[in-house]
Image 1 (cartoon, rainbow, N blue to C red):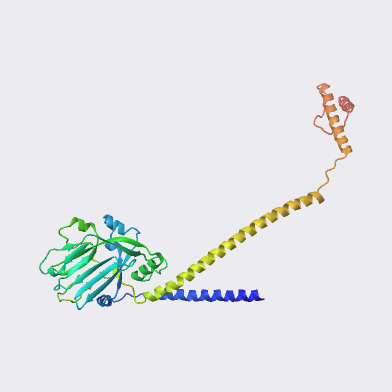
Image 2: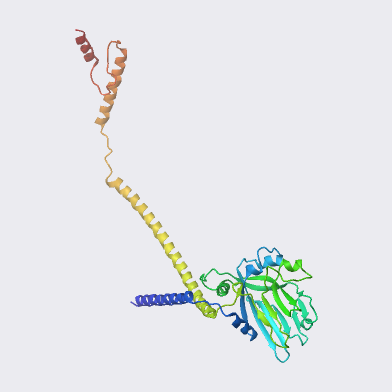
Length: 369
């Protein structure tokens, strides 16, 4: 009785867990992912918040570019890559800092310090330095060496419904794989226009090392345009969707639902595989036992039939004597017929004939008369 109650309670608990998991799965599938307003993204960046941006990898690192750094960026052959940006400025010192990096290791690979054009501004990064206070006096465009950063990459397949927005789908995919590529970027400054841009690496920069014009087939990941006021933040511009986009407002909810579904789903799948293996093994075992049992029953049935119901196989001496007599008579008739004249007719095919040679002669005599 106690075991029966325990099993009943365990069954109810499993049913409740499955029902809750299915409800959460329906919520996960039904949650919309509307694109956020681009102006709100720029406002968040100006307010010092970290902004996550998902870029179409094929647009910035095209397959037609065989530069080693570009091919390395396409190593996992994913559709999108994830970057994070954060803008910090100090009103007292009028220092301005833009931090950017990959979602894989956010904001700790590289940073740039941007200051207003009137207070000895500089851009400081491990690979390139440029003074912004001379933008008014210079008209020559400059570009930094290639900068390598570990960048998170993702796709739109896997556990993500096809109708989910690109940014949400890529981030959710990355949460299940944690894949990253080493990607190369460059900082381009245009003092004449007071513009600082972050570009993907490309063969274009190697072919135009001294001119640095705007690439015709590429777009900058982000553009910072200074308006000339000391200490005022620059104007930020991202490529519009679908080339780049930010996650929706409901993305954290969908991510929380996914983080709830994955462990329970993994446990359920593990239990399903375990019990399936057990039932499969039991089925194979029972099948073999049934086959062996059928073979044993067949063998025993044959043995019992032979022992109790077999047909009589005895042969009497009389039967043997009759067969021998018949055979000897046939042999004798054949030997006598071989010594007779050709006009005499003897039926040699009569295997069981017992007629004597004298009877045959009498019949011939009657025929002649």
